[in-house]
Structure formats: C-alpha cells, structure tokens
Image (tube, rainbow, N blue to C red):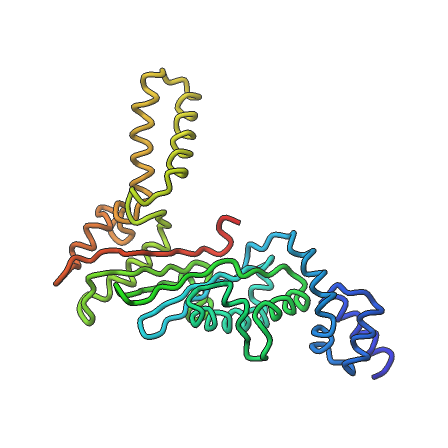
Length: 288
C-alpha cells in the first residue's frame, strides 16, 4: 500500500471510528489495509467512542414489521439523523434485526445475544455499526403478537420499502372471519396509525396521563378568569372530550368522521362481534 493510500485509509478510519491516528495505523497494518477488519480490530476502542456517543439523542431511524403464519413482530431502531436512517448499512442491519426480533418474539434481551449472519452477536454488531457510521444507534423497543386469540393486522404509513417505515401499527382482532371481513383489519390498523389512540377504551388510559391532563385543563380555565364554580363543570367536559379523543373505540372513524370506531366494528361483525384485543403504534422517535 502506498503512503498516500495508507494516509487516506487512516483518515477514513478515523472519521468512521473516532479513534486516534496511531491506533488506526496499527489496525490497518495488522489487517493489511482492510477497513472493515480494522473496525473490528478497533472495536474495543470503538466501544469507548460509542459510549460517548450515547449521550447524543437518537430520534430518527426506522420501524419494521415482520409477519409469518399469522404471528407478527414490530421493532424500532433509532439513529441520530435521517441521513443515517437511509444508509444502506443501517437499513440492512435493521432488516436482519427485524427477522431476528421475530424469532426472539420481541424479547430485546434475547435479541441482543443472538448471532447475525456474520456469526457475531447483535450487541457487538451494533457497536461495530456505531463505530463505522459515527452516530448513536439504539434498538429502542419491540413487541410480538401471536395468533393464539385473534388475527393480527398491520399498516405501514408511507413505507420506504415493504414492511419498513416511520409510523407502523399492528392490531389484534377477535371475530374476524377469514375471506369475509378481513379487510376491516387493515383499515383499523390504518386508523390507529393516523389517530394515535392511547388505549382501546377510556378505562385503559393511564390514570397518571388523565390526572396530568386534568391538572392542565383546570389551570388553563383558572387563568382565563372563570369563576371557581365553573372550573369543575368546564373541566369535566374537557376531560371527557380528551378521553373520547384518545380512546380507540370512541374515536371518530378516519374514513367517516360522523361515526365512531365502535360503530364500524359492529357494522362489520358477522358470526361474532369484532373486538380489539390489543394494538401497538410506533412512530419513530416519538417520546425521545
């Protein structure tokens, strides 16, 4: 390798890993100039750099769904920038991770210990990718629904590829008759992606969220100068609206805003009433 090529590779390796000049040169000498092998060689030093990168916020990335024989999994992997979210290495890593997440049934602890196609664990591949790309990357959350009770449906909003996007929802429905009313399942998943309900019904919404919302509502009414006797009355009406707006069954149907989701489910019920057993909606970066 010429001196110029060596210096170019050292510069490239430093940019990828954040490791110092001497260590990069040593790594390239040991691996005969192979960048990928050099990254692996520097993994321990790369881990130190990756740990520092962990203080940065990763709010971009991808959500991926995997379906097989009626079972379904969903995973969110985050990066710091949308540019990296479109990087081929990142996308390929996410695709393989989605398949492994399905086999791990959404168990992230188990997923991290599984080996990928290169015979290296997910955990170590993640650290290598962080060192190579130079951004914080995190496996944020995952879920798995089997088909033991209901039938699973999914929807990917503005998919960049099949089963990959920024907003993904999955829903498990009871009462679906195959070949007859399955179409409503995907529409319910689409509604969930668009309307972001907090729970199936009002009772399912976290009491802490309701109490906090009520606190805000009362403060807003009080600051508007309304008399004390009206605060309680107005706040009850406003919190009732909040509960309706955030409960799936009480939400207005996105395809017909004059009707509620519960009415739509009843309309499409055949042999048995369609019931929502559970659902999940992931919007990449939401809440970070």
